[in-house]
Length: 261
Ligand code: PGA
Image (tube, rainbow, N blue to C red; front, side):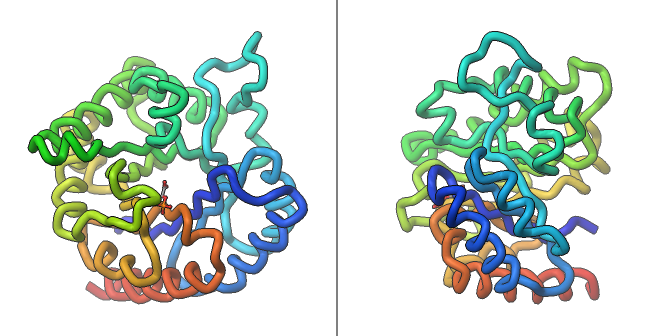
């Protein structure tokens, strides 16, 4: 059975001074049974958030990692550096695809670096509005997933068993618009079909797929109500303990229902 996962992506928000207390507040507010919780603060707050979450089962994740293992890459952070600080790392977020021009191939190499460092990868994908309107959303997202995972497969060790995929339609991120639960579930099925082509049906069936894009306490139930969706990657609302508390409560209900099904 796949886990129910809620992931906070704080993006470029918080300072090292306020990140620790905020993480502790969120940990307390989301302390419900049966779900996996991950908080992804900015790099400079990873250590302090890790300290403030000690003794909880909330995992710490990074928002990005460099595609090369080390070297002359001023200002960059390698997977090895993240080693003691995180157990998860987001890769391929659409804001990085847009602003840092990250390609699927580069993103695939980032996954490879994470696997080498023993860090669980959360691979993001998602179509632009024009692609959805043109009817090519599924093809776009499948193409992103395939291209990145083929880089991982080329290493010869298969896909990492802790792989999580986050489907985030670009037009839904930070806009207050969301996909419908049914559209997100259809995309989750399409993503699993691509993963199945690459790594087999059983692997795909065990791969969690999260939805992201303007998830709030009000909208989360629609997504987690879809059996194909295993949780959420949450941006804006993830900075608000009351929002996270309500999302976690719904997540816990869904996890309990799935465990009993
Ligand atoms: P949002 O961000 O919830 O603020 O739309 C989600 C994300 O980009 O991961």
